[in-house]
Length: 178
Image (cartoon, one colour):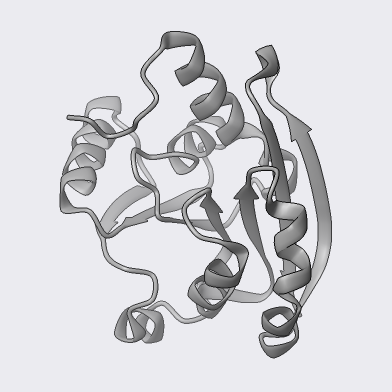
């Protein structure tokens, strides 16, 4: 179905699954997580499989990807997870889902400047936004200060990671909604 561009077995394991699990230490075992721009289900599906008690909403604007995800969820027999064909920036959807999630997460789909205004409306006070970026994440933090102040966020943690087998650098930016 051409859901992702990564095809080699080692690359799939490292760049999708291991990378998707890197924010696990920062995600509560109970609560509600929204994966914005989920694509092929990363990071939401591996997180859900690792934390079965977590409610998960996979959000993507591609109908083809959502059909794939719904079939995968059904095939795996997963409960407490839903895939929805929706844009996070949709104001009507933001109103319906306002302040309902504990964690909003995005993996390499939105810059930090785009992710903050797209994700923050969904997050409860005290909840977190996790932006999974490549090595550019560090530079993006400085540019996002305006959004952090505007939306009442503070940087809780910045984690720089190296993927196994020398497959790249990653930056996790964790922001807390005050």
